Image 1 (cartoon, helix red, strand yellow):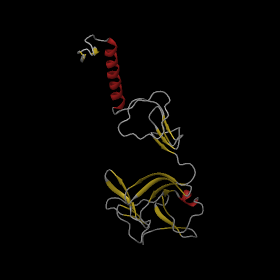
Image 2 (spheres, rainbow, N blue to C red):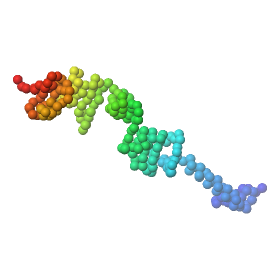
Image 3 (tube, one colour):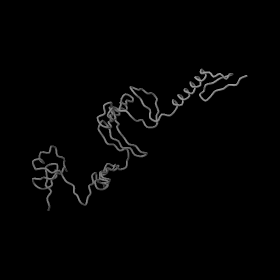
Image 4 (cartoon, rainbow, N blue to C red):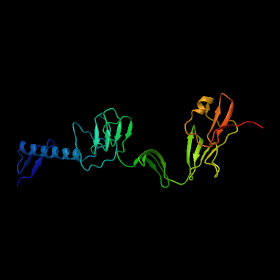
Amino acid sequence: MSNSYYNSTFTAAIGTLARSSTLRAQFLLVETGVTAMEAALAPKASPTFTGNTTLANVSYSGTLTGGTGVVNIGSGQFYKDSSGSVGIGTTTPSAKLDVVQGSGDGGLQYRSSSRTIGIGQVGGEAALYWGSTTSLIFYSGGVERGRIDGNGNMGLGATANAAALLDVQSTTKGFRLPNMTTTQKNAISSAPAGLMVFDTTLGKACVYSGAGWETITSA
């Protein structure tokens, strides 16, 4: 009984030394199929989508790069236009990041394990909100400029005294009252008692007593 043979070019023979080009073609077909399967199963680091592509239940980790097309997820829940502007809740972002709340309270917020700060809408009004009973601190140039404590007292240049709603402290600057002429002062409508201005006509500070303006003078 003859053995089976194949040479280095995969030209094969079974039961005879005569080589068959048909078997060689079958070997090559199998080899091509295995190569195609390996390519299909290889992980893709940067998938490419062309045209209008709809994906459902996609989970992807890695880097999605290339292209300047529009991405629209959830009919405007998340939207990127062709210029790179991103909209959340809108398909017409008017800034690099445009968040639209719509009706009801909410907005954009940062949250850590114990702090929440947000910009949005509260009670139908635009608001900066701070979800904590600790102080909200304002910085510029790496320096604290002011803070609002958990009781709503505001300190500028220092932490507010507990008895002061507004506490302004400095060793190089003062607190400046609104400057206006006597005519402008007298034109203030429904002035409340305790309102203070600096009258530039008189060159003096004035306080409204509830019945009229009183000038603060030295003894």
